Image 1 (cartoon, one colour):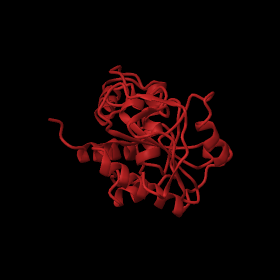
Image 2 (cartoon, one colour; image 1 turned 90 degrees about the vertical axis):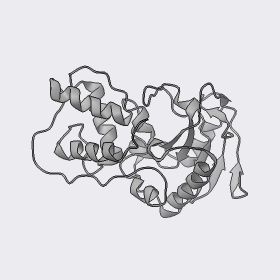
Image 3 (cartoon, one colour; image 1 turned 135 degrees about the vertical axis):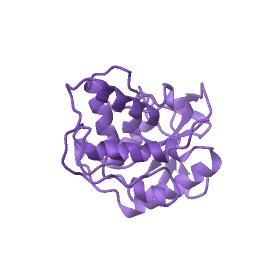
Length: 246
């Protein structure tokens, strides 16, 4: 922990149950004030915590040691893994979120996030494609850090993986209620990225939630849960950018 990071411990943590630590998970606080969010993460009655907390003015606090299992991901999955807390380091980034007046993240806050992430990645072997949004691993429950989070800016600083979103054009997309081989193929492509989808050929509520989560992270210009040509082309760009599996 560097001198610029204040130690503000939370009692809400445990031992890591599986490994390695190979996910960096980014959140927004989603509360009406950052003070209340920080207090909640440090309240033993809340049952939640994160490893780090970034204030809007750029200050950073550490709540849980990196080697411990903070309680930030909740019910979640990625690439078939369900104990995301044991495999991840979680950062809470102060922002009221969609419920309390979602807004742009200040420059000083994002610069602090970038500096913090660089330090975490220097200590932990986390691949770029496993720098994720909370909404990626919990698409039916979460929206954070949301469509205003500057993923491209982080990637330009060496944090995470980014592909330019395909432009939005006309054309027929896949949507809730559709079924058939095209839907099955779409879900297979999302599974290859890491999203937790089954092999059924129905475009169900979970599929719609995954499409929305993907759009928030990778194609934020329009978030509607419809796998339109732009969404599918962006998905293909991401798949092409992923490292080949051994």
